[in-house]
Image (cartoon, rainbow, N blue to C red; front, side, top):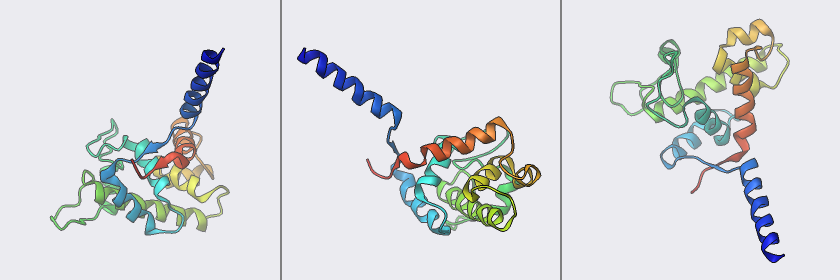
Length: 169
């Protein structure tokens, strides 16, 4: 009987972990994420971490089928506007994690500001995430999160996972 109770307790513990696992942010990205989250009061390190994980799985060398590059998955036209050379090497690169995370935060703050300034109903952070994924013009066109499966899932996954990120480990 004791063995059954121990096994049952172990199964419950595993189920609890699987339902809400802690996601540990890779050590090399902790400081840049925390610094970038100071860009505006609406951002948090956990939000940026969840977004980076969704975008690239924290892979600074990621390239999507659509041509989005780096850890924050910037397409070249967007990078041309938001990318900055922060390390003084003369090149702003979406493959430089610090530069990409900084650009991600600045773009998110801009999109949050746009959402707040608009008359579009919805949470400004959700609208900003949708715009990061599908473009602000689509958020305006649909007056909210665009009805694209990818975009709806993108926003939901990030917001659902946001509380689970940890900056330790």
